[in-house]
Structure formats: C-alpha cells, structure tokens
Amino acid sequence: MEKKLKMGVGIGGPSIIMIFVILCLATLGALSLMTANAEWKLTNKAAQAVSDYHTADCEAEELLASFDATYREGVPLDRNTFKIRVSDRQDLVMVLETNGVQYSVLSRKLVPRSQWDYDKYKIDFDDRVAE
Image (cartoon, rainbow, N blue to C red; front, side):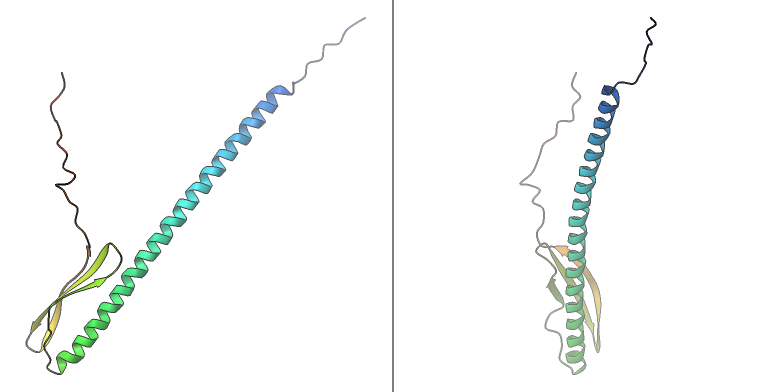
C-alpha cells in the first residue's frame, strides 16, 4: 500500500498573520481618531481666536468712527492710547496721534495681558564639560 503524502498549509500561520493585520489596522484607526480629535480642537481654538480678534477690531473701528465725528466738531481727544479686550490673554492696543485738524493711528497691535516673570523661574545652567 502506498501512502500519499499530503502537503498543505496549516491553519495556524494564516491565522497569526490575520490577527497581526487586524491589530495593526485597529491601532492605526485609533491613532487616526485621536489625531482628528486633536485637529478639531485646535481648529475650534483658532476659529475662536480669529473671531475674538475681528470683534475687537470692529470695536476699534467703531471707536475711530466716533472719534472722527467728535473730532470734526472740534472736541479734542481726551487720551491717545486705547485698550480693547480681545480675550483673557490679549488686548488690542491702539495709539493715536493728533495734529491740528486730523488724527492718525500710530500703532494697532495685539499685546499680552500679562508678562512672563523671568525672576520667578530663573534657572542657573552649568555649562562646564564633565570630565
């Protein structure tokens, strides 16, 4: 009697490869979801910052329009620096200059509400090379 030798691919190897592929795809899917969520939050923060800036800019333009109307009537400006709140961390500062019958905007910029306290976080570095 002749025995036929059957050569076949076992079920173990392809199963391990399939499990590995599924784990890789699940990991990539989770990373994609986390990245998309982080990008969504960053986009919302950026949109809010732009909206806050344009709201403050609109308020600055309204101030200029009211100053223009009163200045043309001959009423001088009571001050030349104006702060408009943009957010909890920033102000829009506008500096005006008057000369006779007209005024001009010298600067208009965003400034932080608080400054970094360098003395509080002063760190001494040792630059010597260790031997």
